Image (tube, rainbow, N blue to C red):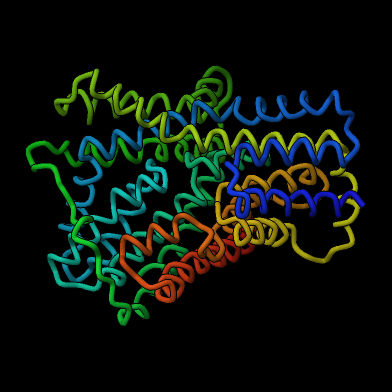
Length: 437
């Protein structure tokens, strides 16, 4: 009976977001209260459960997500992203423009949140298309595939960062495994898949032709790359050292401290503030203004993350997790496939990758102690499922369609299939890693 209640409440969440057009945070609050009542939590205790869920979810994430947003905003506003693109275009040459744009999307997409990265990088695609008279979809899909992968697979993006916390995974290991999955997913969904899209004739609007900073205003190439990639470098380095040469004593404590994601983000933002902000002619007032705008941009995502935490807490405190575990013990499906499927169904129904991933994790998290699944790989499987088949209920679908000025049919044949390739490749990679590690 409890399983039916959960299914009903997930359907209610979907309907409130898609049909009633309710703000996702409000939808999570409503569904959390309804779920608590239906699962037998005393009415006087439901509000406490919701508050504990929001607090426990956001407690460890606010620093990481907010500082990540600040870093991404700084990389965009100071011209560091433009410098990264310029270097990679010169390195790869005109023959390999697709690969240059793909690598640009991957490097710049690590610190930038998806919508910011899309708005920043799509004009670059159009600029290259105009300059070299190339098909915008053909050269653009590889870059957008890279952006999508970083959004779904790699911390410090909100969804994978929140999934790490919910599923009690390790941020560094998840990042390393995520890179292993990201590269084949980007290549398959990017340059290889794009070969079939040359017939799709995009007509980008003149409005979206790029406005670029003059060369003398751009930060140096080294500082641009290091500022964008420093969180990844620090997290991966600490994780590798701890796996292969774990130090003891005070050195071990220092390494553990430096490997904390919040500390990594503080160090990275401090470096970027100086290297590409203050040293590049931006005043402290201008830099802080960028950070204020970044906080405004990320606030809705933080609320969605908190709302998902409320629903997860209701699942835990109602005791429904025990029934779910008992029901799944008879299933022959692999746990990673289960997590991917749940996230995929919610993604197709709701449209939001963040909501899909966090909702699926809320269902899976209480079972992690009873199923044989690596939590780091479960983060990636759920993240991959949350990217499955973006269509008309996803804002990303419409951004792509309108920016590239395509028909709905051509948008599905290019964008929706690209997202699906990323999703399926991510699951396949997680299953392969599960056999190896």
